[in-house]
Amino acid sequence: MKDIICQLFEQRFGKEYRIYAAPGRINLIGEHTDYNGGFVFPGAIDKYMMTAIQPNGLDKVRVESVDMKDYCEFGLREEDAPTQQWARYIFGVCREIQKRGFLVKGFDAVMAGRVPLGAGLSSSAALESCFAFALNDLFNEGKIDKFELARIGQSTEHNYVGVICGIMDQFASIFGKEECLMRLDCRSMEFEYFPFKPAGYRLVLVNSKVKHELVDSPYNKRRQSCENVAKVLGVETLRDAEMDDLEKIKGSISEEDFMRARYVIGEKQRVLDVCAALERGDYETVGERMYQTHWGMSRDYEVSCEELDFLNNIAKSCGVTGSRIMGGGFGGCTINLVKEERYEAFVAAVMDQFPKKYNVRPEIIPVVISNGAHREA
Ligand code: GLA
Image 1 (tube, helix red, strand yellow):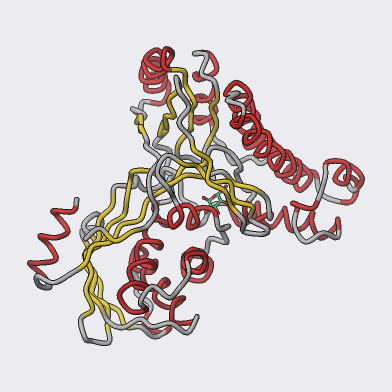
Image 2 (image 1 turned 90 degrees about the vertical axis):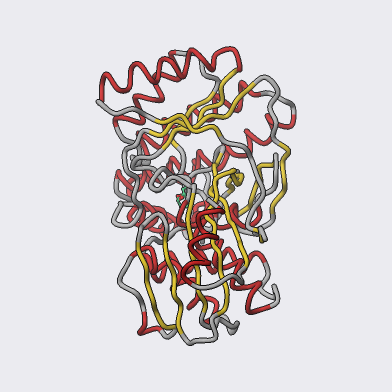
């Protein structure tokens, strides 16, 4: 990938450039908790978005996307927003940096990625983090701190893409560390690195290939439900609510909002349970919680789909330790914690049963927990 973007950059813009990369992420547990002030447990992965980039001395950005096979030019004022969706992410990052009083001048860039699109691995956060990191380095001597870089990506989603997402994906893409998951408290923004190398287990993703697209998905609606319930409870976010509180107001909220909140409040506890279990090497409990999360996301939060439920059932029937839908939902991957000795049989069952039912070959994606955004060269 690096070779391709270097070659293209040289052909189009010249021999001087820097290279930056930022990864996608997985999340062991803690889904839809970030915008509820709760805990998440992500890690960056060895699938990156990468850009070759160089200031061009002009007042415009010229950027080529290898994956989109597309080229775009845009200025840096609010009214210069490009029409191509992929370029809006970059434009958004530029504008959010400027809004914070930092500098962005014209630049040339070629970009490409190895984060599968629409698979729930946060390709968009990888893209935002890659440019936020690069533009901080190129024009601001690295003065924007890492949390602000993550917020720049998040605000890009809110203001230029239309997904009112939480902070997890951009945080993971910026702060990721080799062989470590991170437990982030999304209320205080305190976090801890957790070394994660479960001996005798593999972490494997199965991509259902059901296209996951949070833009236009009911993602924002889920968030709205949570806010409705928090308001009735008189708390800032569901982080401050317990199951008992929820039961007490059951009659005064809609059945749907009740189910959404029941999932979120349960999930808050499950993240803490998983952390405690990891500390004592108890992967059985980790796995159990993962299955519970799947159930909650499927039945209460209703962000699963038939194909992902089917994959979850295969995992269960193969004795996989833990399995659940990962990320925002509505398609994408399941994340599976599998004992070494069950791995082959699990993969074989998935590759046999899923295509028979849905006429689609799912993709097994092995992941390595890796470093966050960085300069490559
Ligand atoms: C998407 C959002 C995140 C988070 C997850 C669900 O990935 O971008 O902020 O809400 O969904 O956990």
